[in-house]
Length: 252
Image (cartoon, rainbow, N blue to C red):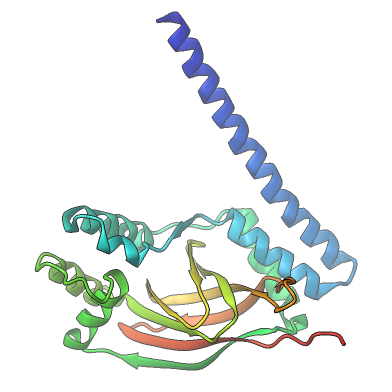
């Protein structure tokens, strides 16, 4: 019994140490961003502020739609409900996160992005239009939601939660985070080449943090800096669509 208590204490101490070390690492990116900004390299500082923001901000991954194929629907519903509850709950951003936002605002005019969001459209939806779009965000195409999900979808419509549908061209994989300016909550997701992904978002002002990756025929792997795309989610439940594009100029 005594040995078990000692092992438990050691596990707690180790976990606390890992959390502390993680926070040190995250804050070091923010400190480096401030130093880089002070040196006058605003474009590089912007990328560092964006990286620090996605590391420090409270975040969750968007529920993986492929899990709807293997998880029992009652359990899948709980996962979705927990995510929506987290997404909708109020939260005030901590000072260091606010400082990241402020650093981004100071440096964003220096951005010369290789990533962009094109063909963006906003379509306000009726409830009948909304429900199938919501289903498509959480269920793979060959999965039929049971009737218990309809009240959840309707409730999201009443809360004016929008559906976002982003697509990609060939070659590039995107590491994406949608960060609410008010709550600082970050939803993370990945978009693979020639595919599309859906997420949901409450009304508000957002920073869309984007980094793209490509493997050239030579085997060389290239990654873009972290870049910022501002995005406004409307006050009424809507479908937001857009295409992610990347243009890389390679030196000859």
